[in-house]
Image (cartoon, rainbow, N blue to C red; front, side, top):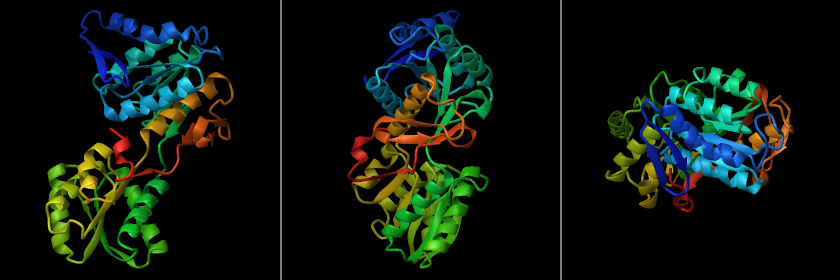
Length: 350
């Protein structure tokens, strides 16, 4: 089943398809191609600012937010916005849409990849037809796209968590880390950077233990309870995983430790809203998906108009976000993670 979605309206037209799957997709994405003629004549045309967002799946509040950020940017510079995507987050579902968009000659596809390799062939066919390809949120292998908009780098993700916990415990006391699995590559890289930051910049904070909730809600909940029993002087917990921080907050919320033990890490506003509203959690971090989509749209514009090619050192303007420079392997870094707190969490819905 495929969907065509109009972000911001909350309405998603669902068309069940079986034998006519591709024809439905053509009809659906035809909205993009039809409107693209106002901006250009097809892929490779430097005036063709018809830009289509293709998230991992539709109906996902995270991508609703990011793609609306892209829509805002495209409207700002006078292009034509569209969003298409599959119901399920599968590479096969994205390939069908990539092929259709290529046939329609859009100016650029902005995609969050469901697989780093499986959609590569379709993307390279699009590029061969002159369509620019920007990945965001989730990258492909570099040879399949022009640029990747990276939401944050490892150093920034590690630093924001250490900075938040240091602020919340007045830069002194025992802390612990509740991570995902012991073999999680991303989390382990962040944890090593967090340890180095603590040692170098926060000598009065002691990391007493790192535990692993395996990104399972109940396991993370139980690990939080065990941490607090094992370390009665614990002042703070950092959880660099959205599952872990939500489970830890749920435990703290109804325990004697609420308001006494600080909790921060990486979470989403919808998961953490209740805990921020009732004071269980003061602040946590993630990137701002609206800015991510906004930047991706401006990168697509710069590629279409020939201002950049995706080469290291290329630079372009992205509206109110300012100027960005393409780094190694065609990566553009959005910036530091965004901090959510009681003052701003109401502005987000993902």
